[in-house]
Image (cartoon, rainbow over all chains, first blue to last red):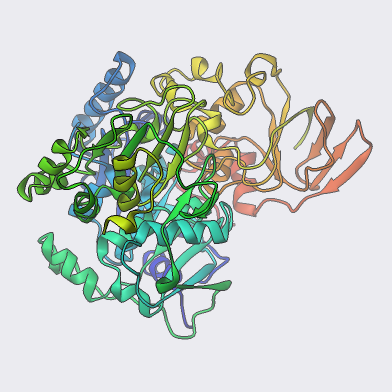
Length: 419
Length: 167
């Protein structure tokens, strides 16, 4: 039986060959929670009355959403999670280490793994060809107790990428274009599986950006095959030993196919208040809209290559006086690289504000909530009403290049004229 | 399982950020307080007006976004007996079942604010008693019916000590 990537990865964890449409119990390799979902996860774990975690060293707890804590209630949630880790041996990631998805990518997750996380963007791990998906607190609590969970093996949508991206167009534009085409529920319950000659030209950080947003089309996961690009990236992380190649079988069966010619794409912008409300940057509903805040970073676009491209545009220039520029590295490791490469200095000289590695203002808890009537252009993954702390603010989503160009002009700007 | 209640109408793509906004992040360990703001960014009148037994009626892609289980949890805490929508986002759907909140997917376009709805989950029939029409909906997968009937996934695992979903 020829299998999709989702079928292969779930088969290896169910201990038998499985196919789309089946319900399966599968063992999990990694589990994560964060400070927003973690306290409820721990309470649900306690409600099970189990004495121990099934895999404590594979149970990861992140303080990243409200970090450092802006309020005592959240400080108390942090205390509760620290105490849980001390008692049960789960691995704690402290304030400032970075966003859960980035830390898992840097240190732990490998091709072929199965990860479940109490955070919807757990699908980021699909960039490594790991079956990696978000669930709620109860599901994660039970995976923590039993070391396994149940899945409906998803049908897969094959996304064939052809050609190479033109200058000024990057992974974020690809995934925004795809979500615009599929719709916010266009891949609900499905696996998005990327294929085609175009993927060889996408580096690992591009693949992580694309996989990160699979959930914005409703998908359970967004899977890239693992290849030489994956192997080389693992090598830079000192984890080349964990490389394993995975490709879908040639006659695997797909629900449908979507083809994207990368060479024909232009920069894309998602407008309020849904991620599928996507327009090419030249469109009248986007171009020239003034923005009071620009955010570059988060788990979607907070990696070194994202900041390198933004710095290329911002080097030697200043932000527009009416536009705040927030830099949110996805991890401390990324922040150190920005310092070492002189990129941090470029941003500070451009008038940027550095935010602690983590989720930053994306969740609306702190570090950049919008004022009434303000407009923000961000490289994050969601623009839902109220997302950045204020239902009377507007959020536009775009690439780090578009964000950097827009910070310079104070309005949504095509980055290609600056390259 | 049969239930009956009054409909509150919501539109398409209601996100978990509208159900439990990030500005109330600090209330997540105090769910009773968080429930006072339930769905606030979708309809300001909902949290104040919702009564035990009411039914939330959505359009497409209800509950899109975050994995936060607080979203269906505070809807349930506010007294809502069931969610009816044209379609429901994956994680939100699974969370509802796990916490024992019934979800029905059918064409909601004929239902209006305040209509009295009666739902028979086993038979897969929704009746709009105010308008006098019936809709059928596909039953939940066995695995989910079982979790729902046993009062949610925590109750299920407490009962069996493990998953017991295959018979």
